[in-house]
Image (cartoon, rainbow, N blue to C red; front, side, top):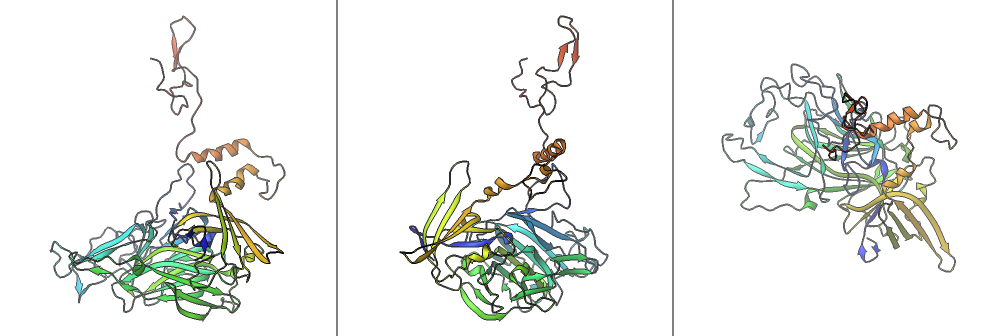
Length: 518
């Protein structure tokens, strides 16, 4: 780690579009937001993804055999930092209630573990596939006493698992009888890769009842459609530049709390860092800062050509042989360029100064000056590529668990003083609110307007106002009404009163009624 000021502060660049859960950014600070199936003007609301309660599509009672007919269902959501990318989670071959059928008791046993039929309708075989996806701050549970279901005590306890960031993380509970890889979770969006030195990083924990055959596959930089669920089955990306097979750990459980010893978070979570080298078309794999393998060949595209940085699109998780419970917890995902604290232990250019500026009612900014004599960082590719993509600058304190500041990179300057003979790079970043300064609603431009044009454009003011009214998010715009209470004399002194509809006591009035003199 490079010394910045008086404290050790890791710094990272992260590709803007891959910030998950929290999937999902480096720093694990993301709260995903559900995406409605269709526009719901004036009814927009934020919610956490949950495949049981708010899946986008979930066919009820999909087939009499409870599982061999795909339900054509999915959960789709995005995150608040970048709504252009979407996440898809498979649901399985039936709805969450299995058609409101009765289910087997958990004491259905086979050897020393529960069978896949536990919790499945008792008049049919186990569903071929079901996946439960949601967010959690703590993941824990109990192991049912399968030898004596009437026993008041569980057979064991799962140690509570928390995120090192202290925030929420994504939970995928998986059951699939398929012996080939089945799509479970996918990110549908560009990775914003720029070139050599890009690092795909993910922090996850995989646990399973049966670790002998259950496997998880991580796929990075893909071709095809992220996820499709139809009556003929579920499919994911057709091809990927990088694939990594992961063997789940056994569930970390204990039979009693009498000698309880909580595992450390570092022993539960695994950090996978994949350092990409497009020039040699290979990648190095690091797990928890230790090299697992180097010089691994990347796969080609379906047309036989290699993946370019611009071709790297999406990532996905597949599973197979998970007929007994398997769980994948995801804390963070991102495509990054570390400015210090490199996973391979590479000595990084030092940061000579850092200036953070934040005032009331203004956009905060961060200026960072680095000395890069050997051009180790290769930051020019962020600005001279054929396509531009937003990248973020993240600042951490002590460890790279959760950022204390985040903002979009807005500029890079390169300078060298002849007397010093040392090139200096200055990075400038502003927090997310800076984007509001150049957001233009499309309806303000009119039908013939061009978002890239700076010339005056005529527009329909009434149409623009109607669109602006949708930002009341379920409420109604307040109305400026007459100052009277509602009944006025027809003529002064006549004693005849009539009702007025524009009274200040009317519904949705902008006038306070608590001060009305009675």
